[in-house]
Length: 342
Image (cartoon, rainbow, N blue to C red):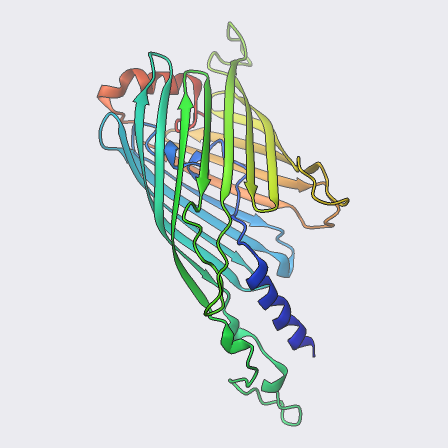
């Protein structure tokens, strides 16, 4: 009976779930996770990897990996690719996608620029229903496990879904500020595990931005000249889910530290919390590499989840576009998205 309950739960989950996308706390260091318009913004070869482990307590563990590589091919055009993999231990659910991205830069005036971005590729969702053990497969007398089942419900579902996906966005930036928005899953791909099912993947909307304040007009022995204070925000919405991240990060040049607060501004039930987690963030730069770490400290009523750990490794080549010297210099000075100064 227990196995019947499990299979019913999983199938209902597969039918009703709209496939909420993984999100990342350190989006300000890896803006490619949010918006394809950031492709090539560093005006050089740029690559990175993010590993996120959510709720590492036993069967609730969820792991997400994200990687990217991009560069510019002309003054205006950036090209890149992204890969993402998400796995849930309890359900054995896996979500993989591989995309190509392109951006186009438009100079609005001497200070402001705009980039338009497009990302497209293929995704796969895998629930591995074949690994489930049902009661009719167990011989109670001998303990032998039959590899097949006569349960007709299992035959209605496939193990894998392959789909084409498309996202688009824009970003606007200048020396001390950046702002952008993106919409993922524009084509609403069908992610139903049923053979004749139709479950369109919900649109994922994100609106994000940041402003860099110069910390001091003159440097001191403790605070270097290039020190800045980043104030940033990131609003995300997908189906019934919404989240607003607000934070500040103090950047000392080689070292950065701050806090991101995850909020739920549109509480959908009486059990909703406005503040769901408080997330300290750290970063350290060594030559062309930037290392980042964040910990999501849960403050809601979900219980003891052991939080969320997120590690980032970013590489940016020191060789930059000669024709883009002015643009790169301004990015380097403020450490904007695409030039991770910390």
